[in-house]
Amino acid sequence: MQNEAINTESVIASVKQFLLALQDNICHTLELADGKGQFIEDSWEREEGGGGRSRVMRHGAVIEQGGVNFSHVFGTQMPASATASRPELAGRSFQAMGVSLVIHPHNPYIPTSHANVRFFIADKPGEAPIWWFGGGFDLTPFYPFREDVQHWHQVAKNICQPFGDQVYPEYKKWCDDYFFLKHRNETRGVGGLFFDDLNHWEFEKCFAFMQAVGNGYLDAYVPIVEKRKAMPYGERERQFQLYRRGRYVEFNLVFDRGTLFGLQTGGRTESILMSMPPLARWEYCYEAPAGSPEAKLQDWLKPIDW
Image (tube, rainbow, N blue to C red; front, side):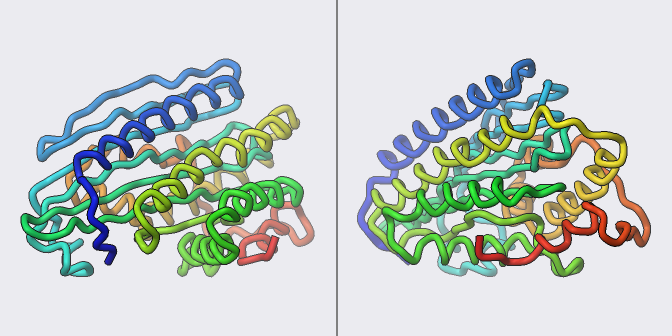
């Protein structure tokens, strides 16, 4: 783990300031793209320490439901489930903060999108703090367009390039591997970036990368929204969208680390489960008609070099 000497109070203040501004900017920009909906803020406090502000848009012109959450939680000790896999955290107080968002559009031709950037730090008197950054963004289309997916990944690559030639390939692969539904043998979508435990550079470089990923989400997603939001669709496309949203629910409840960490640390349940779509459906042994656009989605749900 990284043992660089840092001032805990100073870095927490800097990271928190960025995250609050990022939440503001993302909400404002998505409201402009929607043209009708507004994010409603719900502030909350955590009994064990900390709190956050959840912002949710429902029934917008473009966004059926979306949430952009900021949270900052802290405690005197990590849950046993966390220290079992990270014994070096035992006996340390911790602080965790981040911005997490999921956008579920009305139109099946607009992909669902997810982004998250976060910071974790654990202290123990007389020892250097243990800290790391994490985050990323990923795209889940129902009716993919190659130009949209290539744009998404080009933005991701551009974000990573100043930090080294291997950063994009490494974090793209990590995203493909992480957002994989083992019980379905398919990726959740077409990927993007995922990173965790980032502390192998000096603090300022790690922080700069997290900021670049957080700020880059809008550059990656909004052009896709603008291009697809006026496309006509019918009940067939809507029903397929709802069916595929079921996969999103399966991943978040079975595999997602952020969901599990939030629930294990006594986070606010409504905010943690904000990522769930407002409507989803399951159909027993569903098979899309051969040659249909719905059947072709399976060709996309695997790691691909875009």
